[in-house]
Image 1 (cartoon, one colour):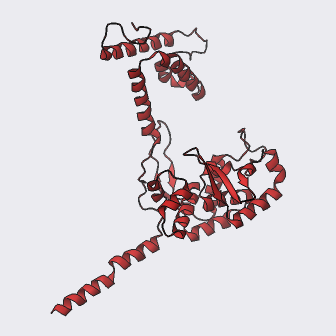
Image 2 (cartoon, one colour; image 1 turned 45 degrees about the horizontal axis):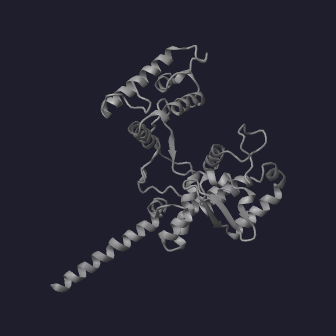
Image 3 (cartoon, helix red, strand yellow; image 1 turned 90 degrees about the vertical axis):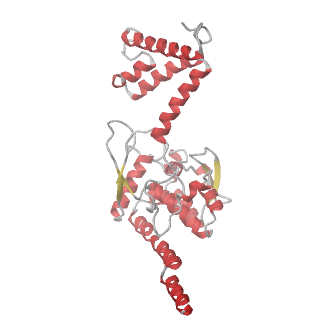
Length: 327
């Protein structure tokens, strides 16, 4: 049995750990067999919930697991909590944390100058054109772009206040003059819709979304991006996904996505600053400059020119001349 502090009486830590999990699983099994607790057939222990995943919806499962943890965790000793945290972090890293080394190697996932021009010629909607311009010129992530509110713009200094998704920090970016003017024109044209949306510049269309959020949904924006990319003849598949979730269909991986606009912006900024990684990292709002390096794309033509300059015919000709002079 467990004492009031969560330890097994008269047992060492190893035995205490075994006894705890044995009693916890027995408790879960007893609850699994008791259908009269809530009348829904879903009110059982954490282990039982995971075994009966098909019995409830995902939201109900999460609520039950969360409730079980809230009741159990305060009574557990430290080494049990450490073990649970270790299991959770292992699962999280396996499912969601990607390697910083891209699986696509040297494939350019950003737009080239020709591609960016073709893409924006295909975008015939002023709202999505402006949204994609914010990504292509300021390097915003899709979640940051769709949430731009008129309150986030400092009209006196032409600055945009951005809540960085990854670091959850507030940053400011200078809006280029043409983009700033396009924003003013869009606000004037759609002032009533923006006001109804609480100031969200990229407001959702009435009757086209059941989500409560007042701005256009991220997935819908991704779908529109893919539509415009296909219209421009830029829909290119380079691989298929490695799915970690069971029963989830394998997806085609497209070279160009909404994140490619961010790649383009970061690469463009790096070129304008002569490869200053520190400044580019600040612009990209990355906590580590090493992350920025995975975003900077090298044009294949420029890469080949540099290779030719470093290891081309001129080097071989010079070597041949030196060898000839010795004879």
